Length: 68
Image (cartoon, rainbow, N blue to C red; front, side, top):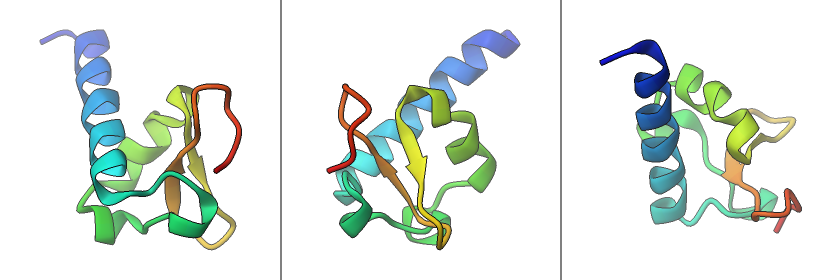
């Protein structure tokens, strides 16, 4: 698998995990450990709507980039 294809898969899996965990707002954000994801995957997904809170939790912002 090429590097670009790997990134696409990582982002898709990360977003799915966040949705399944209900991490869709700052109030419902989860730690990488709670999500069972590598923090590097979450950081890689930042341009795809994954947002980090000041305390190190992550959530999936809505499609317009707004926070829940």
